[in-house]
Structure formats: structure tokens, C-alpha cells
Length: 237
Ligand SMILES: Nc1ncnc2c1ncn2[C@@H]1O[C@H](COP(=O)(O)OP(=O)(O)O)[C@@H](O)[C@H]1O
Ligand SMILES: [Mg+2]
Image (cartoon, rainbow, N blue to C red):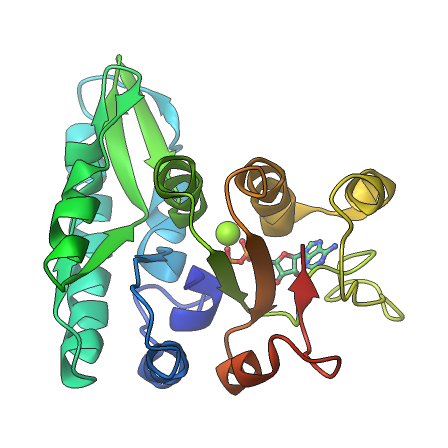
């Protein structure tokens, strides 16, 4: 669940509960084992940017680091509340516990999922090798995909999918309904910018590990019902 959907990205610490709940409901209808990661949106990026993160850690950075961590943890609690209310049994796996000196440990996700829980990861700040890093929900999806080889990976964001150019700044941008494994990725890469650029680079990796990757609008998650049909609105990779 992209931070662009579950928060108002321009207003510090603003949760958008409605789209979050609708996304969760759309996933429930699948009746499949789920792992969820969510972005930080305005609970992370605004203060992280003001603090100059990511950066080399210096003493004095602790306070802002902890404030960002507190904010994204608050968002995570709100997401957990929605998941609980919708009948799932979520357990959030701290990003801090996943990363150890360049290696990543996702075993907690498996342990909880196998017992019927829904493991939840979330974008957070991380102190690693003297650096303050930002670990995004997209990073976690890449790590999870390489370990668990999922059938389907869904990115819920605030646009209908991947376009040939940024739909927010270019009128006439065209939605790419499918992106072929090898060819089209390279044809569109120069026109992907901002948040979608790094997402797209991670998708290039994720598609090696998963059956299907979908980018779709989290404000219209009911579209998921059409995922295998022609009328599906989104990008299938
Ligand atoms: N070619 C493109 N196709 C789709 N979105 C794009 C493209 N280029 C840039 N973007 C921008 O990427 C944004 C999504 O990334 P981001 O804001 O990081 O969302 P999220 O919070 O879901 O990760 C869209 O709102 C869109 O403006
Ligand atoms: Mg993003």
C-alpha cells in the first residue's frame, strides 16, 4: 500500500483510512495468504527530507531519526487497526529487525504467515553501517519477493499504473496496460520519474522472482476483481 494512497502526502501525519480499508477488503476477496507492506507517505518523507535523510549518521541526528521512526510506527498502528477491524490478524515485523550487516532476515514473515497471521512490513528509517538509511515498502517487497517467490505482487499507488510519462505532469500520458518482460521495460524507462522511477527499478528485480507484478490505483482497489480480464485498469508486468 503506497504512502501516496494511505496518507495525504502533502500534509504531515495525515492518515487516509478509507482507501486503506477498501484496499484491505479488495484483498480479502482473494482468500489467499497475504503479506502486506506499506509506505510512510507524510508520516515519513516530510520530516526525513527536512532532516536531510538519508545521510551519514552524526551525533545530533538521533532526535530526528527517532521522531521519524515514531511517526511511521504511529501510521503502522493505524494500518494494523484497520486490518484487525477487517478480521485479519496482523503482526508488524520491525524493519530494524530485518536488516543485519548487509543481509536481510525475513524469517519472521514466514513464521507468522504459516500460523495464519498477516505479516506487515513498513517503510522506516534504519541505522546501518554508520548511515541513516530509508527503507521503503518497495525495498521490503523486493526482499520478500526474492525469498518467498510470490504468485502475485500488487503495488497500490495513486495513479492507474505505469504510464509512458508522468501522468501528473504530462497531459496525454498513456497507461501501459501490460509491460512485456524484456522489451517494453527498456522502451519506457527514460520517461519514468520520481517515486515511480525507483519503484520501477525494483519491479525490474521483483519480476524475476514472482509470477506477476501489478501496479494499480489504490483509490480504486475494486478493479482487482478484473485482474485477469481485458478491462482491468492497471499495469500488468
Ligand atoms: N511514468 C510514470 N507512470 C506513473 N507514475 C509516474 C510516472 N512517472 C512518475 N510518476 C509518479 O510516481 C508517483 C507514484 O510514486 P510515489 O509518489 O512514490 O507513490 P507511492 O507512495 O505509492 O510509492 C505518481 O503519483 C506519479 O506522479
Ligand atoms: Mg514511493
